[in-house]
Length: 461
Ligand code: ARG
Image (cartoon, rainbow, N blue to C red; front, side):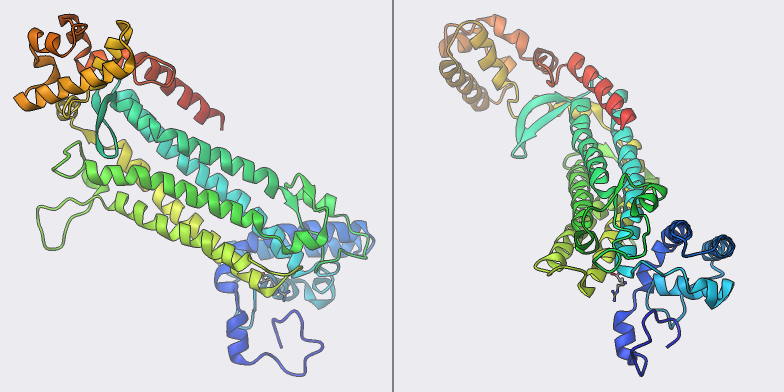
């Protein structure tokens, strides 16, 4: 039963279908560098506990370094007989240093505490890479916002014309959820920074090893307080899967807008050739595939999260083999975002906005009606009355097929005596936008301040 970590009590090796079901090397091999790093730390605590001579420790560390180099170059890879990454690497170590020294490494540890530790290590590194990618999209949005300090656009609610806003304000609105996602990854890391190593199969170790020492060596803040919890809980993985899915959901909201904005009906943006695709049959086509794949993959990341939660549901303590199903969904969510993020950043960075069209559409649909109402309120009119009067202005303008600013003095006065010709000064897109100068509002000064804040937050993450 070569390559197995548990042959002793068995008279035969596993049936072929059993071995095929059990096997995880095709996905857990990405943990190999972490497994070797943790093995080196484990070898040192075995030595400190008097279970490995200085000479054997040297041999083992040299063997593990050689194995790491061979894993890295591809010279050492899992064999058909290897069940998982842990078994494969033990085989590789024994090949290099012999069974006498190589066979001592496994004392006081189990694959249960190993895999829980390695998965945490892998994930802590992975979310840092993803965070960098997310900040790339934030940067692309901020760069576009900075390039359009006074461009305007129609702001919408319910997909209906609402109030004019600055284009930069709208673009920056997408940066805030993404910055919060990066903060969520950092929060996740605080809880993930606890090492299960030393918990053994579930009950701890009798060999006087130091879990704290290994934890520190592997970059954890502390070691686990409960070995049963440490080997069987995967809430850290579910938490990461949630933040990964949330990030995708946030990206999909931006993606959906880019899909709409690039249609001729909207005509807000043109996509750069490098970030769009053509059609195999329709020569005129230029498709927003980056944005569509963002939308599409979001469904996949939500599935990864719910699938993992379903795997974890109602598992009794402690380790169960069900838990081997914890890694693929999370690995996949990370891999999809690592593909997506640079492409989406590239797409956003190279969008060309049709700022003249955006400006001409900004007042369409009577988006300045609220400005009439708020102007009346500033003249001392109760808002209920003001809202009615502004609504009547819309009705008259709509009937005549003109804009609100084209109503005559007499028409205004007939609607409400408070509506003097003065009201026209708020009936421009720029006037409306500049008037919304409360903190977080769309006035140019506020948006400039916001851009500074977004950049400062991104830099300090
Ligand atoms: N490959 C397993 C996992 O990914 C770890 C092995 C634990 N197996 C066992 N029989 N205790 O969870």
